Image (cartoon, rainbow, N blue to C red):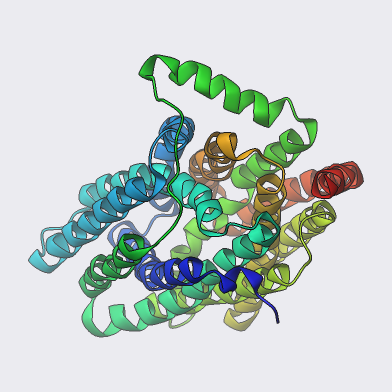
Length: 408
């Protein structure tokens, strides 16, 4: 395997810090979702929790893109990572004191979601400063996806065991401490400074308009983002309900939830590694369409399963196909967008990915509460299958466009 992006020393430093921090993040996410299910035993409340965590991306995501294009991206990342660490320490303190409530969990979920609305867009735009050769950018994005998904494999496995042995509070404390690694990496990086255009708060609306035109006046990028939003609404929220699945299997619990979440991470990691060895983005649209259909089929299969081993295989496959969709869509857009508009275009990407998901979480939570979780998965999987087939039919024209931009 060849990873040209790792030839950049600063990228190696940055991704190493991210690796440690994201393990802690994965541990905290699992611990929070398990605590919410343990307190409520309700799929609807899992949906509400997912809504509260992701709603800030819908509210602030587009404004975040304008800000990211007009400030020092490294300094903004230091702020967002430091604030996320404080949120984790607050969770740990409340848990250790025995005073934590469902209200605390929902509010702190919303707080972290607000921080992430700015952090995610900044991290995506910042990679370009670290990896100076544009030809290595698809590889850097794929490596970043690989690292994220390796932590999604390791974090839940550790968290499931840790919850059983010492409780959720230790997961939150570890996450807070893990931010030291990424903050240290950000402070020692030696990258060319980003010289942003002059910022004028009165031009926020015009800045959004520029980002909107760069995103939606291009029919190919528009098609990618519309499909991403569609999958975000009907598909991605299924992960919110893993605690409900783990709670219903024989001898289920936090340990079972750790296995389920880790299997998603394994599938996602394999997809990201495969993408990291591809030569760029030109044929990825068909990959997105095919992966979307595979995801839909296995979500429908998951709706009929009660055997734990088959559940693990199904979530492994859905994780693999979901990552193929998300990372490929990210790569296609990043390979075509101008750098001075990158933050704003990627903010539209993040809103399509995470800003739409909270409403899908609410809908799926309501369906699961009243129709049953299996029926909710079956309905949403069927809808995703139709959407993925339509996108697959449009894929050749998108691939032609990506190829023309790559050759330019």
